[in-house]
Amino acid sequence: MTGLRARQKADKNRRILEAATGLFHEVGYDAARIEDIAERAAVSVGTFYNYYQSKGDMLLATVAMEVEEVLDSGRSIVADPPRDVLSAVTLLVDQYYDHSLVYLSKEMWRTAMAISIQQPETPFSKRYTDLDRTLCAQVSTLVSNLQRKGAVRDEIDAGAVGAMFFNNLNMMFTEFVRDETMTLERLKLEVARQNRPLATLVSVAAT
Amino acid sequence: MTGLRARQKADKNRRILEAATGLFHEVGYDAARIEDIAERAAVSVGTFYNYYQSKGDMLLATVAMEVEEVLDSGRSIVADPPRDVLSAVTLLVDQYYDHSLVYLSKEMWRTAMAISIQQPETPFSKRYTDLDRTLCAQVSTLVSNLQRKGAVRDEIDAGAVGAMFFNNLNMMFTEFVRDETMTLERLKLEVARQNRPLATLVSVAAT
DNA sequence: CTTGAAAAATGAATTCATTCAGTCTTTTTG
DNA sequence: CAAAAAGACTGAATGAATTCATTTTTCAAG
Image 1 (cartoon, rainbow over the protein chains, first blue to last red):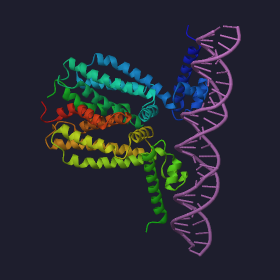
Image 2 (cartoon, rainbow over the protein chains, first blue to last red):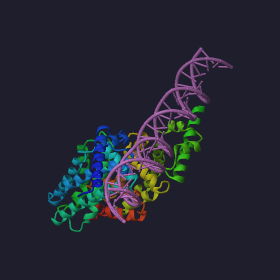
Image 3 (cartoon, rainbow over the protein chains, first blue to last red):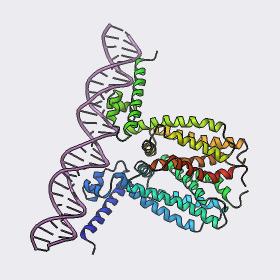
Image 4 (tube, chains in turn brown, red, green, yellow):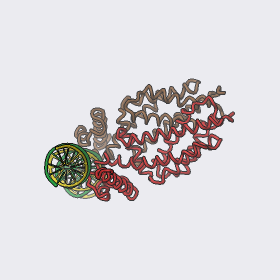
């Protein structure tokens, strides 16, 4: 059977993760003190640091879970996209955006992004970067699939176009979480507008 | 004449700014302690906080100066760009990138970006965001100017295309500062590659 | 030239994330 | 099963940013 030690470790890890996500939701990232997280998880402060390198590391762990789901939710769209390029891209992008606020507040996103930029070498930061790359690849795959279906011109560099769509949606999402007054609706509209020229131009039907 | 108080204030502000930029360069952002900055500027710690809201605020002030220069250096290119769209965009983008590391290290950029995302409401953060917007507008103006010259198709939404180029270059710059091993050369090549499809497609000569 | 606001400056105290030297628990070995 | 080794846990101590109650300096009115 699994050793006692391993079981206890898994249990503690779960307790810490739950305590942290709970507190982050209840009081926000900044106001959640390590001491409080540790107390709620019934471990000492020191133990918290045995499981996570830092407070930021902890947050990125919860963000990573979120992004995994977003990736998942995009798969079916990529597998069978509408034939129109702008529709397909918009469908995928909106899917991403709609999912993004299910578990995380704008504040948490801001903090997570800030940490992943500032300390790019921590393990969870690397995981976050990887997830970003995977998301970017997913968009490129969408373009590539549309190309195979004959909806996107053959001579187009699907990787480059996918990266462009992705960088755009990512940058705009950053703007969105920075601005507490911006709504999801406005974000989607704006991004769709920005995507239109490229989407139209790479389409087979384009003039 | 200017009151004594106003003169002293300006002088102190200059001393603090110089002390901070100096220390940031010499030892990096993290290692520069407020106490040291204050000492070098010959003021107390408390006074430092009368002039800047936080250490991050201080950094963003130095970054803002840098971005102003970048903007400036772009103006002449926008005013009289090469007629080829990809060349024009690449020239401008490379100009931005080359200038970016003159005063600031990757570490400083990372920290500045992190702060501007995490605390978007502080005054310098807003200034930073404004500068970003101005940069974006400059790229759009370039596209618009190329359009007036007849190098870009008439029906194209210059604002949308400019935003796309800008978001792409900005996002890639973020990746660049995150990765200590990435060189300016590699960054430029990659961005040029990503820009090529859109640049080609909006060009008048495009197939 | 006084004097009493108003503005600035001060630095000791506070707050929190993070560390680390010592203690306790589990596992392994003989 | 006993002893030793390895692995976890602990919480008081550390260090740095930020705050704030006091003190000092400047300004302007009479």
